Length: 360
Image 1: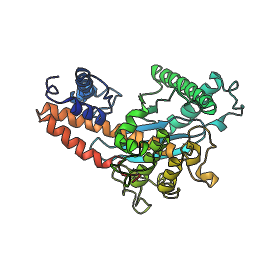
Image 2: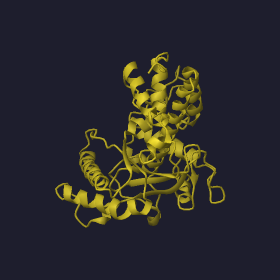
Image 3: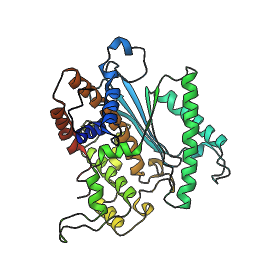
Image 4: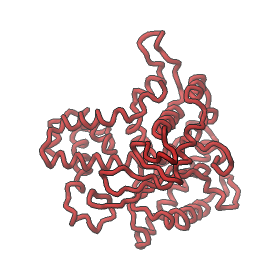
């Protein structure tokens, strides 16, 4: 713990965000969380060889990143030879899992039994045997509806599906039928890692020092953050093609995932969508709504719902980088490095990768 004592609270918060940890704590709690997070990366290979938990000593690790939804269920599969190499995006999909059942979708009919069957069919009979992941990331679902009756109904359904899915996966693990770690990921952690708060603040309060530089404020911060993330992935996928699958510095695309990358360059312009947000358009009108639109897949010949597709990829890549940062931090602590300088290096390295200029 003494290694972090000399750091300022702001530096500790920066390191926490870079390691996928909460930054809303006291200094003592921040230090304790960081020490706990890097503990396994300071351990010897022999103590971790029989563990399914990620460690720097494990090679060929597969991560399944899930953005929960019913009509818009998105997942990405990342293969890592080791923590030092760029992961391969082996699968990337957006689909509806509702066609697996013929029951009506009214709230009384969407019972725990229906949700449990959906979870079993989707994961046990399809995703798990197809990909055999070592780590499963599940985006934590929200519990607020923003006052919308339609959103409230979908929130209840997705929350129910989330709960029974954890039950199914935990049962498989306890019975020895699934050897994987389950990690819940708070959307705020992923958003805080990829989007600087200043970006949202600039557009939500008008920004600028004078009237000539002020922008029209955006009230829907949720839809704005979705738009920033879509544009971030759009930037990642520039230049990606079947002839150049490694054009992105964060992941290497494959033949099955390149078509998804190309979808980001068929969407409406970001300036057009920003103008809609500034004019007070709803999330549905900008294409960033959650569970209130029909599934739109490639098979239907229509554009994909890019915000959900973005979420599963950004969550997966963020998780990989969080582990890498913990490993680097553990080495810095072990080697007695100047942690203030190390923190500055880490922040300076990551800041250009964030969604800072996506809406400028």
